[in-house]
Length: 309
Length: 309
Image 1 (cartoon, rainbow over the protein chains, first blue to last red):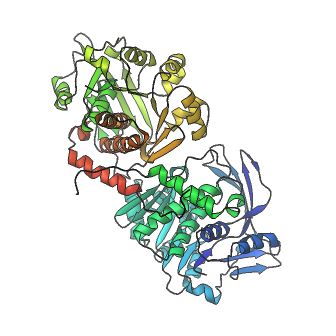
Image 2: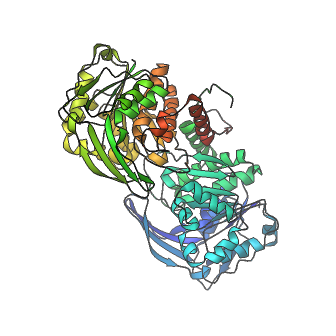
Image 3: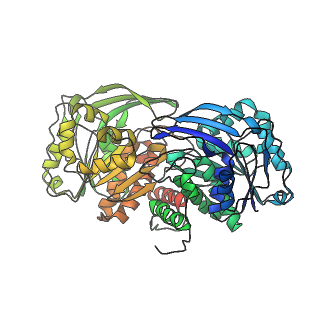
């Protein structure tokens, strides 16, 4: 176990212009861990499920060699449930229902071997809980945190506290603006870096992702996809693929992070091509290799510059 | 003269959150030709101005070795005037006033040496006029056309006619959707290629640009800029930089077009950093070289793929 994934294991119910899923396997920890496992990391999940969480869902995670020792099973409670409807443009959505259930009063307790995780991804959740997880980990190499507007509005002090302890913040443009109070991206990132995270990952969906690292910036495009079936989990798969690649190579240089952003983008691009975890569950190494090649051919260019500046 | 720039020479009046310009030099042909000249092309403009168009504006173009033989000067008429107000996000704008003036009844007539131009950029304008210009050119190597929603609504048959004769269509996402009736970009581009253009350039402003060429696609990012002062002319500078690079190298391979898109993006990135033509007029080769280097470092990455597929 070299990558700790904290977040939800969930039932998702998803409606898109292409159809409606039943109650399927979902949750941030699911996508983070599956993506990280594809990158060769050894993920372990910290979460909780109810007695209604089906054995095949656990088996789907175990099949990817994901450690589930950190998953509390509360037989008398129900699993987290989230229902969502995407609009026609697939960029906006309405949450129809959220039932916290077992995650409502969750107190994360880490198994002994989780406490030495070198790589940590804290999926979008209550920043108090994110802090509780971090407090139990000894000297991690890299901590990635995902969050959203809701916590900026309702738990700002707790969010600011946990931000001081993370290396990478993964958010979208709008969240970056809200957190910093700055409209222009470069200024927003500068302010956010003052709050703690050395590195800021701006997720832009179909417009790719930006990696800000000290004074340098790297941009990974999104592949122009034939069709997007279900955006659910794309951000988590991106964070999981990013951190998973870093964990598998155990190298946190900027050069390696550039590669990691491409790997994360590749995992996210698969995720949206089918409902829920369908595509990310069935990926092969060769499919990922082909996709990485498409990403590279999308932006790589050979320009001879005359002067060495 | 190896690159013909057809479009407006204009007075622009621009309001942004940062201030308001007086009546300054503007127009699509101005930006196209200036950008192309910076890339080493030898542009000539086809347009018309009134007796009110000041000598210093003509001098600013001539200083860049831009051929003005194709510019009709109608002493008794007034120059095209456009007034615009940008919203706070700089991505949306309201046209406050458009006075066609001398361009209203303009009949383009090309000087003899313009008729052999190998590279042609048809700036956004009435597709009937774009056709009239094309009809006077003998066997061009590459024709780039810019257009907008207005012509799709009001002159669709004329637009479809001229599209059959162009190689590259430069538009934004929304225009691509409107022209094709397809929402998904990949499908929209396929339909547009069925209308004539072999190559489709999708301009996305702060989200970069995509080059679709047969079954291949290339993506050029936009630089995350500290501040955007005035977006006016960015699309024209992009098209002019793109075509200017191709003209200067006289090479229309896909590999060279990838380079050309980066060059176009660099020129566009300068344009937005000051009001009107202020920045693009004062550029040096070294500034462009430094900017190209920034573009390359933004996306270039070294990923070793295991298999040769």
